[in-house]
Amino acid sequence: MAPYNQLFFFPTIVTTANLYTCQFKDVDVDLLRGEIPFEKVMLTPQPYLMFNYSIPSSLQSSPEDMGLDSTREELERQARMSIFVVQSAFFPAFLEHLATSFVRDSCDWLEVRLNLEHIESLQKDNKP
Image (tube, rainbow, N blue to C red; front, side, top):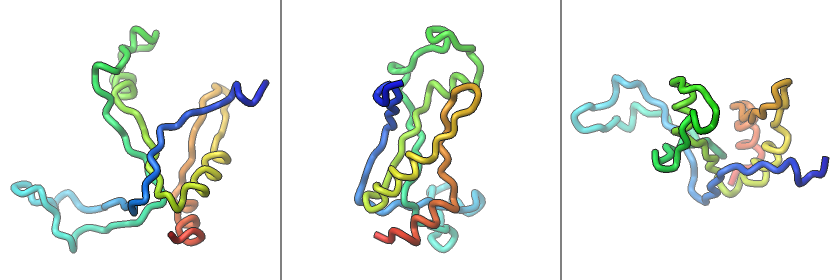
């Protein structure tokens, strides 16, 4: 099969901004002000992450139109799109990792594996 028959397109935003994940306990959120005390959060730098974008209903196809079941899981899948967000200094390493992260199973589905250990090694090797 010709290589151009196996192209994949991934929605990706490349940014010069530093990326972080924020971990906190839900009990630490002030429900009246919607704030979390800074000392109660753990910010962790990330080279890249995935953002689940809510697709406007006007752009969603119904599962029936696509020949799919109208299960809760399928409706959720139709309502969201995962978008990669990559810190620009890590973009080359991200592309390399993405190129080697595909696993093809018997159903011919593709899966991207972005594991924490690999992210940590990228952070050590590619400090921006």
